[in-house]
Length: 432
Ligand code: HGY
Ligand code: MN
Ligand code: MN
Image (cartoon, rainbow, N blue to C red; front, side, top):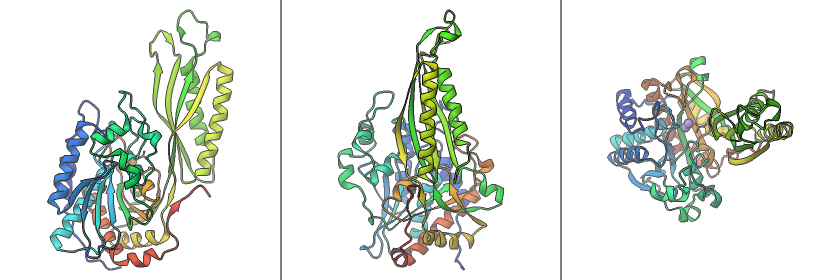
C-alpha cells in the first residue's frame, strides 16, 4: 500500500508526555497518578485544554470518561473512537495508556491543520480508571460506557470508605445515568487504541509496530486466609494456625499452577497482600491478598482457578485455616477480527517494520469490544518493562505509532462500509 506519509514531530510528543508527567504524586516512586486523586484531576484539566486547542468539543459521560468530539461529514454514521487512559499504577511510568490519548490529540491536530473532515464523527476518549483501582475493579470508565459497571460494583468502597459511585460523581460523572446512557452494540463504528506493548516481543524481533491479534481476559480474586493470631514466642511450631505461611503456600501454588502446560499460555500473579496484625512478634491471624489469572482462553483460566480452589481447600485443612476466594472482577479475552487486523497491518507495514502479536495486558479495548469492532497498535517497550519507572519507549517510536493510528483512522473512515458487512466481527472469546 502506498501512503502519503504524515510527519509527527517527536519533539512535540516528548513535550506533551513530559507536560502530563508532572501531575503525579511525588510521594510515590516513579510516575504515580491514581484515579480519583487531585493529580489525576489536574492531568485531566491539562487534557481538556489540549482537546479544546485541537478543535474538539469536550464533555464527560455518566461514567466520568473525558471525551473530545468532532462532527463528521456524514452525521448519520456512528463515531470512530480513539482512546486509552491517563491513570497509572502506583510507581508506574509515563507511557502506559497516555500515548493512546496523546495519539487522539495528534489526530485531532492533523485534521484541524489539514482541514480534512472525516465521514464519521470522531471521539477521543480518556477512559476513567483503567488500572486496577482501590475499589478492586479495573477499566471502570470503559465498563461504565458499555453498561458493565454493575450496581454491586458502584457500591464498593475503597480502604478509606469512599463509595465508587461517589468517586465517579466527584470526577464529573453521573452514576445514576450510567445504565441509561450506556453505548449499545452498533453505537460506535470502530475503536482503535495505541498502546505500549509492555512486553519484549517487538524489541526482540526488531519491529517498531505491533498489530494486536487478541487481548487476554483477566480474572481477579480477593483471597482471605484466617488462622489464629498468637504469641510468636510462646506458641510451639506444631500448634500454630499461621495465616501468612498458609497464604505463602497458596501464593506459590499460583506460580506452580500457572506455570503448567496449557493449550494457550496462562499467567498468574499475586501483587497485593495485607497481613494482620502485621507485628513482628505476633503470628499472623489474617491475610488478605489479590490474585489474578490471565489467558486468551477463558476455559483455561477457569481450569487454573478450579485447581487453585482445590489447593486452597487442602492447605486450609492441613493447616487449620479458613481460606476464601471471592471473585473481584473479570474481563473477557478478545480476538481482533481478521478484517480489522488486515487493514491495520496494511497501514503499519507501509510505515515501519511490523509484526502481529497478542496482548498479555488488559485494556479498555476489552470492554469496547462488547459493542464495537476494536483494533490495537503497539509500539515497543524497552527491555519489555512496564508498570515501573523504567517504562520507556523512544519518542520517535511513539511518533511512528501515532502516525499509524492516524493513517488507520483515515483508512477506516473511507472503507468502513465494507467493514460493516464483515461477518468476521471480533467477539469476546468465551474460551471456545
Ligand atoms: O493490568 C493490565 O494488564 C493493564 O496494564 N491495566
Ligand atoms: Mn497498565
Ligand atoms: Mn494501559
